[in-house]
Length: 173
Image 1 (cartoon, rainbow, N blue to C red):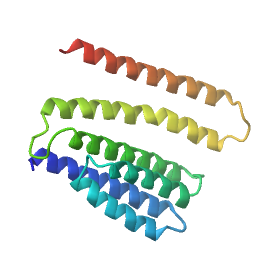
Image 2 (image 1 turned 90 degrees about the vertical axis):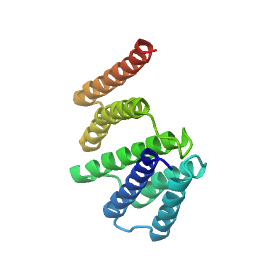
Image 3 (image 1 turned 135 degrees about the horizontal axis):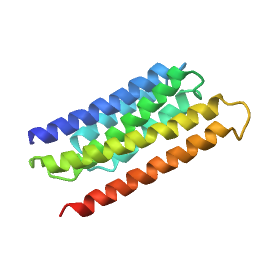
């Protein structure tokens, strides 16, 4: 297996296990059986990133979070939620990139840059949506002006990121 594939698969494991640790730390009553299943799925996903079980792993992580972690009320809990979302994104991106090439083939630097750039844009676009959710969770009355402007800003940022990605691909052969 190539060195770049090993790095990708290691990053897949780190992202998955970090997601699990965030879930366990944020949960008042962790589901230990689910944690054991997630660890086993993580090991298998690192070995076979092109398996359908990677999708099961992502679903298990999300389900574990939803079942074990209460709705966030403090800023720390909201930050943990954002961290878990980013871990899920990194898990998805590393598994997808690792599965796109055979194990012995090194991942081209151009591909790494493109995937990192796109992943960074998605992670950055997640922040305004997360911020709107954080504000909505703290507001007592619906229809607040701050939420409206936040939602407009989030949609504008997502539209700009989509335009930027499309423009970049057409600019290079």
